[in-house]
Length: 172
Ligand SMILES: [Cu+2]
Image (cartoon, rainbow, N blue to C red; front, side):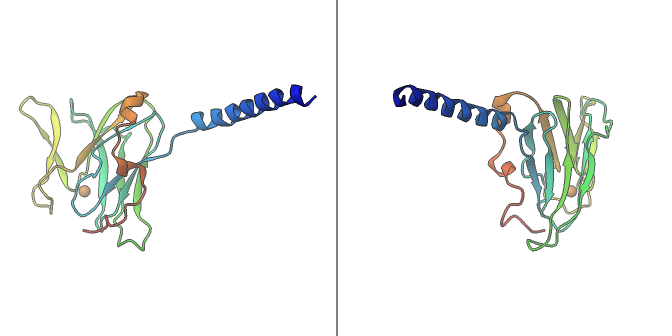
């Protein structure tokens, strides 16, 4: 009796373990975080997400930033990405965030309209450039979200994009 039931018990345990692992593999992935501070830049300027996976912009700067999508071919500003993350006085306060979810695979460019401006390049495409007269640090505050099913791209996100609030990153 014991001899017959033991393999069955092992098989049942294996089946239960398999069943438990299936929902975990299919669970919706957590957010990918993009951080800002007083450097007026996006710390993770290129991130990849699955369709529908949230991108959360976390503002650890005292000043507000905007996150505005633009089409580099036309300069149009589609509304899929169009928000603002309020400034955060410091580590003891709740941080200002803006969350975007993009359902269609593609490459989405965005910029902060406070600290960057859209300009035409020599070839007539449109790109973000540093905005004159604001307290910028030389770079154009802009970034790219790649919406993809490509596992390899999804695995290449910067390590900091897995953490909501970065210790020691406040300031500005
Ligand atoms: Cu900004």
